[in-house]
Length: 499
Image (cartoon, rainbow, N blue to C red):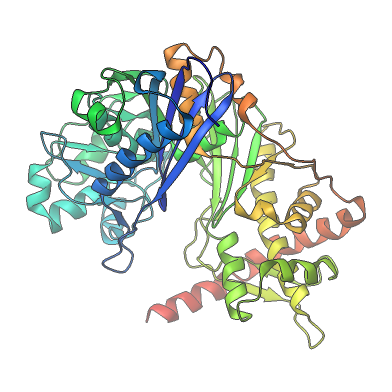
């Protein structure tokens, strides 16, 4: 909606895996314009995941003028810019900050051999305590070792290694840096932002100098003349450090105080909670909150909505809304499903787990099957919730968002399984809102972090049904037992499939 009168607008940009999103936020009126552009994922070989930084920049140069036109404002009305994006994407830049190859994204799995090799020299190092991350495919050291071996000409010219949104800030005019959560998830830095020398040394390759680690809401530069011309913005507009997309999406959903938490029913299943202390647990991930001194322990299940899409495909493409109607008529807990169709990330961290359905008989219906899939994801979230609470984190009522939150039945099942009311979010714009609010904090246009809640729209509370609680408590215990007892069979099947 167009503004009337002078504006002080904040630009938030999010480099997502499937799209680049941007919003203009008025601290008094809320979001006044939003837009997105698709981003192509490149996978030239099995397990590779890459993106062109040039595509990100083209999207940004198209989106910003579109936002200005939609809001009916001029260049001088934008008073701060902050960026978000995937972590820990890896960009190799030359001395002019130009990308030397496509960005390697966080779900890229090319460096599996290098991960195995680095485990031995790092065996005596407590990476979780030092960096908050264990050695995984998201660690940057194995990726760097792969690059040095397989693309030595690129590695030899690499002056900077940075993340997606840090590169975008630098392309806009910021000084070289990496944001706190890129540093944490990279596995290259200690908590104080200094490099972990043992990790660097374990690769036995030449490294470019690692960049300064900076916190969200830090002003790291001003919009350059060339970038200002391309975007239609004013020269020397402040550029503010934003943060990781999942962190800023959670902040943008109103997670401010300890015990605030959110469940994201996307293709994968994400769960994040706010802690006032550093929350280390090998079963979970840990990120720094955008708010200084706070933390975001979190989990990510490999499948959530993606399992439903697979189910939908094998049932002939039937609409998920139809399956929901049929599942409403099914008995709670009639079947027991393990949702490990892509292995499992947290809290089990086992890529060789496999999906399973127990309790099938000739009277089983499509509705029974679908309901069991919805229940399985809910059990997985409950397992994460119990890790949080067992470690002393007192959780309130969770918020729920992403595509799966459109299913009323799924939200009802989730509330029943965890035994808490849910607050659905309406039209949550994701990390771009968190970035815009951070730009406002840094430039003095937003006075308090809690003001983010002024821009959050919530739906009607979903209360748990007490009649289902006993059944779901029993089935959850069955779920944990099934999970444990079937893992050996899963591993045997996975091994056989690789033979």
